[in-house]
Length: 368
Image 1 (spheres, helix red, strand yellow):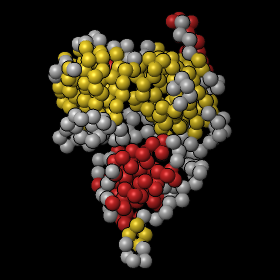
Image 2 (spheres, helix red, strand yellow; image 1 turned 90 degrees about the horizontal axis):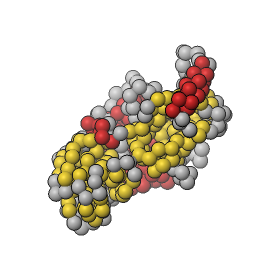
Image 3 (cartoon, helix red, strand yellow; image 1 turned 30 degrees about the vertical axis):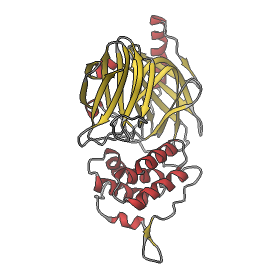
Image 4 (cartoon, helix red, strand yellow; image 1 turned 45 degrees about the horizontal axis):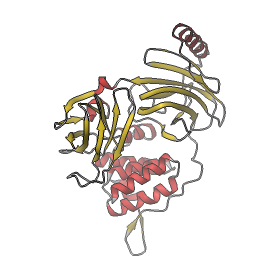
């Protein structure tokens, strides 16, 4: 199905394999040229700015409130307005049938031009960061592993570091925490930040270049609004163009209680809107025993629910995307069956694509 192909394409893009991703996206668009998610992914894989502009305009034609396409078009061609010229994206075969042209995707992405910034580099960032971190380490005994020369400061549940990235290099910190984190990477003096989060075994959890709508950041900064740490993660940064520069990392520990949309006992259900909490839905489940928990997109919702259960300490229990059960759910709904819980448990619901605009999801807790 188209949705499955787009999910696979999205995974390939995150892995850096744009060539295979483009093949899947083209296959979807041959069948349905009015699929906004396919056009948005197409904008991610093409390297020619004219094609990216036409793809973004097609997204906005189909989905005028798409934040990512709006920001992309604003950056590349602010004078353009959405229209129907995406037909130019198609080539006409000898028999008159339209098909998508082949897209040459180089093994190494074309480098972006370094962003201009009228401000001057403020050397005191690094000094202040180092001093702040040293004071906090002395006062509260926090021990953080900082690799590649990064310096940090912070207090409470939010900490920041300024890392130096050498040409074509990376810089990283190791962060110990069990629970959910929000992470941003801000390029200083024009650096175009790329952010990666890896687990304790070095496996890539999530990657972002050019965030989509995170408040307080510039267009080319990076953000991972919501990711889980099972004890320790490595936050690694680089620059898209490989230029040397400074990148400021901010890590915020998320208290799930502040995101709770509803509280359920076994046998109850509730409808929540994950767009109320920046794409995150949290339901507190009270009680003990063996339960089945489901997350179902309802109404006009365009959410593809992903469901995770964690205990009151943020320790991971189970995760599901696209259930494979006999339950009466949609293909892309989520479910975890016959899971033992004790005391307070949190069901965390996010959207697979991360760009839902109508976020209604019904969460049910059934006893077994």
